[in-house]
Each structure stands twice: as C-alpha cells, then as structure tokens.
Figure 1 (cartoon, rainbow, N blue to C red):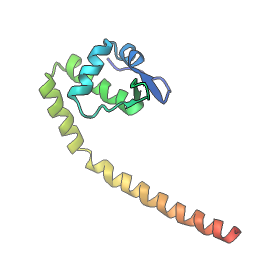
Figure 2 (figure 1 turned 90 degrees about the vertical axis):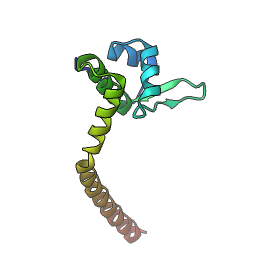
Figure 3 (figure 1 turned 180 degrees about the vertical axis):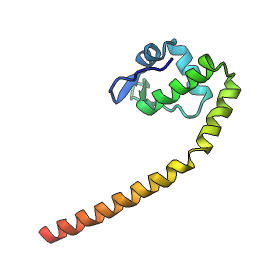
Figure 4 (figure 1 turned 90 degrees about the horizontal axis):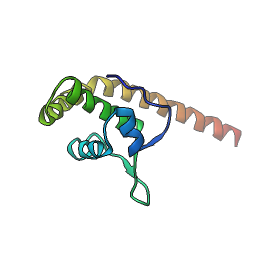
Length: 114
C-alpha cells in the first residue's frame, strides 16, 4: 500500500484523495483528528497540502487500513514515532550549525568585496 507522491509543491484535496485512494471527506476528517496534518489555506479558503502533509496522511492511511489501528491507536503510534525522532534533531542541529558557519563565511566574503 505504498504510494508514490508526485514531485509538486502543493496538492489540492481532490488530488490528495486520489493519491491516497480515499474520498476527500476522509482526508478532511483525518485533518481534524491528527494534528500532524496542517494544510495551508488560500485566500478562498481552499486547502493546499504540502509534501509533508501527504507523507503524514500516507502514514495515517497505512496505520488505519493496512495495520488495522483504531483512530486512538494510530494517534498513539504517531506520538511514539515522534518521541523516537530526537535522534534526528541532533543531526538537524548539526546542519543548522553548518549553515550558520557558511552564512558567516559568505558575509565575510561580501564584506571583503564591498
């Protein structure tokens, strides 16, 4: 039940439903139940889902349909997965520090050229 997410920045709810194989009302329901899904809204209040939203929805769909979790069970499982993620935050912090260093070097180069 793995899905292939097209290489796009934003997805409308109909597209998300087709990619996941569920109706748009199901996507809206999951959005209310799972706080990891936060689509942005256009001026006309249309939902636009980002890639990370789609990945979260795919995880939810797999937990509910493939693994047969209840909504409450899927929420618990997602919380557990987020608790296990601190290892990633150390790597993220290293990346941020590296970016800060590069930014300082670029500023120094800019100052030299000015």
